[in-house]
Length: 391
Ligand code: AHM
Ligand code: MG
Image (cartoon, rainbow, N blue to C red; front, side):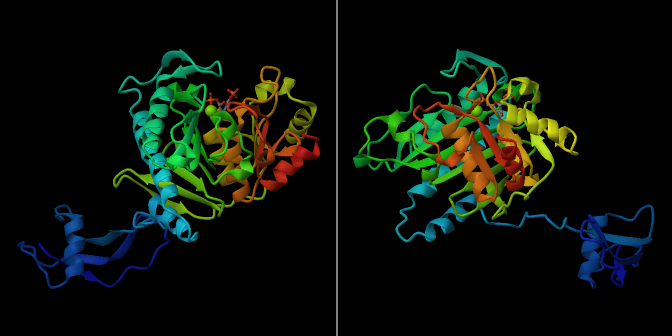
């Protein structure tokens, strides 16, 4: 059976998944390849044998306009290019990001298979924050500890799941960086399959400070890099090294995070707020006043209760994310070093704002590794609006 294509079909909107190539008619009903027209032969192969009809319109699959499957800018290549901007860079930093990326792929795999592998549920221990650890908190923590622990330039690791930061290498042993992380933020939501995430912050190690806690208690302005990984409908890696924000998506077929968008900018405004409004009666007055105003000003509310997912949506679509002080958590609930500070770095690098109380989040200097702060971050004009109520 052979085909010939009669003329080219009209071009169609790029969003279409198929593109008419033209009319076809059977030219060789007795079978056998008619290879005089390779395009027609290829089209015929895609269509299969025309048993039910011998005439029609050929449709060629068209990639959606934003298909990036041929994008080969991996996270690794992106970091190498970033490092090339700094002539003195040694490549140590690239190794650290590669460790986080490897751990994230492993965590993503565990999260995806959590029910099948029996990893859902409580681990049975309470961490230093007084929170019950989930099995996946422990798995994610181990993955990051193992991957980062082998990197020769890591001096100190601090995790939400561990009481104290661990000193791995002193400065004279090559320890240049401290990596702080929340291995699996939002893990209390795991049972319901919503997005959870890893948040990380990278600081320089000051070899003159012997104490690990003191070493990591740096203001957010000192961050060398920060990012998060969202384990959602796809696995997303968002990173800043102080030169804008880059967004990567894990291509599960090749096992690499591929660049989807560089220089991500948060929309200047959007009438959306993200907050646990059930606590509103115990919020400080300015937040309550803002919410009252928003209720009559056409605002929408979106709240998952998983900071990475809520902040990621805010980054892409705009609005504000807030975790104000409450009666239960008078300092706020979000930990400074590995939650508020890295998210603030990302927001500012994307053109947004982040405040903790009256101060810019990045300028705060904590005195304890697990210290909590209030969080208000998001689109520039929305954050300013909340602040205009005194928040
Ligand atoms: P976690 O680090 O123990 O998971 O807690 C932090 C999470 C954030 O992801 C989220 O924004 C917040 O807790 C939700 O808290 P709440 O349930 O009080 O709204
Ligand atoms: Mg957390």
